[in-house]
Image (cartoon, rainbow, N blue to C red; front, side, top):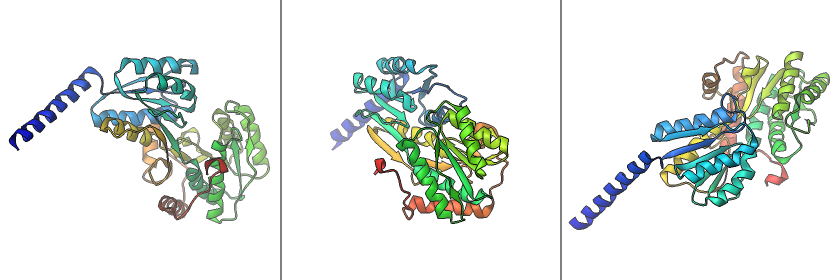
Amino acid sequence: MKRISRGLTAVLLFGLIFFSFALAEGAGRIGLILATGGLGDKSFNDISYAGALKAKEELGVELDYVEPKAIAEYEGYQRDFASSGDYEIIVCVGFDQADALNKIAQEFPNQKFAIVDMVVNQPNVASLLFKANEGGFLLGVEAAYMTKTKKIGIVGGMDIPLIRDFFIGFEEGVKWANTGATVLPTVYVGGWADPTKGKELALSLIDQGCDVIWAAAGKSGLGALEAAKERGVFAMGVDACQCYLGNHIFASMTKRVDVAVYETIKAAFAGTFQGGIFEKGIAEGWIGNCRIPDEQPLWEERFGFTHTVEIPKEVMDKVLEAKGKVASGEIKVPRPPEFQ
């Protein structure tokens, strides 16, 4: 027994020394490849960085990040990071890194990767997805109570399953609130970078009586938010808290990319990392709403602003009720057929 005990102690001691040496040599590093736009976007880049930074601080490892200026740079950065052998995990932010990562992940099968908000079907890639329908549901509840005209408009970037997932959940949230509010048929810009058309479509919805506008349309959505500001009606944000853009934006559906990135990095260092598709929602803390009391301070501190539109207590009580019921499974928010 003594020999076994001493041998085990020696193995553990060697493992500890080896792990410490690996960290010192750089094997205990996090690699973060941001989306074009870089830090300061107050969206996926900033909140991905926040998740990686939390992992760095808690695990005591190093964090290296790059800020590509063009999509064409993704493949080079991914290959450079992977070929160095320095990184326990490389996190790629944004759907447009998928094509490059599909190639690089095959070139470096022993390297762990993660990609935010897109699927790459490789065994060494964790694809981090978010149940947008559940976030849409909570926002729909808020919108149903905040509208005075009882008409709500939504502007989408493109008519694709990913965007319909947002809106189906939103419409169900409005129905569940049961305030008599209705959602007008969704209008689509047809692209992600046309704020002029986004604004035109939002103005048409406002002309039809909508006093709350929600846009899930990338840069095109910024035009819709501007239209709401000009006409003095409410608007809502998407993906990250966009309420800092104006006092007329009273709430935003949030994808908690910081939580997803942190948990995935932690798993990589703990030896429990797995490739595959990981889609989580309210129950797991991957989907939220920037006006929920325990989440609001996070966004205000991170983005340096204060929400000015008051959400009445009775409205927030309904939002929290909906959140609890979705998390428990009592409410099952529908999704487009492609997600079934």
